Image: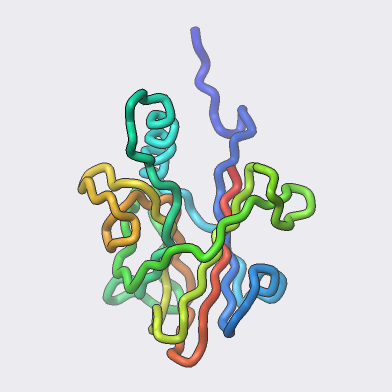
Length: 193
């Protein structure tokens, strides 16, 4: 009889976390070292569909279409009635943000050395995704965010750069970050596989 191998049995530990910093022209290192916030987040259930699609697509012959990886970070203002200082927890069954404000492509992706926690050109099981929302972008009371990739399983929306497109990989609701139109907001999102 085959036994089910769970994440804790195999050492597989998909998890996410992010660092947030308001300020202009910040580097990845400046955001991580002097973050306004550092928060762990939830990998949502539908992310397993995207992982399966990445694995499956790699074995199909004569397929010219490449399944896009994690491309965008979406931020939102949450549902009407949310307490902005104490929003409800994100849900494993979540597929979209409650009230998406905008999405942005990442300005950089880098592997991270698992011991030194610094960028490396060598493939590792840790990836940092960095993006910066400029002064006029994502202005408002932000209380939710998530990473998006590939296609959406139910809607078929293939563009993870469009609202309700792509597959949500992870989600986090957090006490409000009031993003003014006078400052940039840089976010470094880290996934550990």
